[in-house]
Length: 119
Image (cartoon, rainbow, N blue to C red; front, side):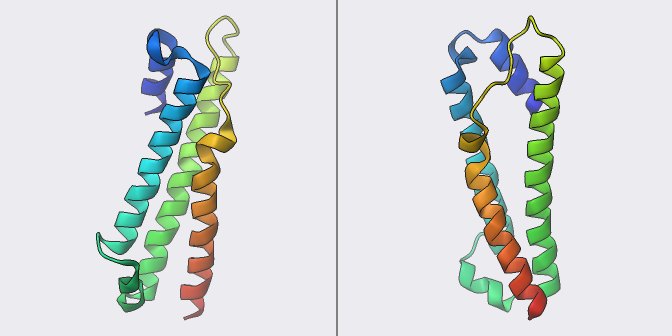
């Protein structure tokens, strides 16, 4: 995914602006959050969480945290690789705008993990 985005940023004329690339990253992040929610609720409502096996639910919640960590790590690795080539275009996007919602979502997940671990 990051390699494809890097290629878009390098080659595409339309998407090569910082504003458009930040928007693209934010959309990808939002879709990851939606997919995490659907995975946790299995397409149902959040009321069904109380009927699930707490251990299985905690595993699903932890996988969402791992997704966030891996996504941000890959972003930073790609950014670091681009910095080693100073003549090329750089990833100088607003990371708060890209990862802010995911970080907020992860904080809520951590609270849910604490609660369901206690249960």
